[in-house]
Length: 71
Image (cartoon, rainbow, N blue to C red; front, side, top):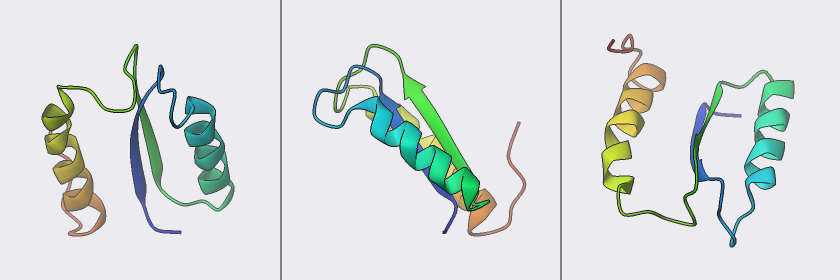
């Protein structure tokens, strides 16, 4: 299982948050790096999603390029 980052709205009606939580549990059982970021009150997509791109870039830098996270 590859390292996985999931950013999920807890008000998502299309893909319920419990699916992301179940996936998180399975990844942890497989000892795969996993991070779940929950956006409170957000549905399936939100206008500030573009702001999350830095988090994705940092995740890829750490897990694919082997760079240490920026603080």
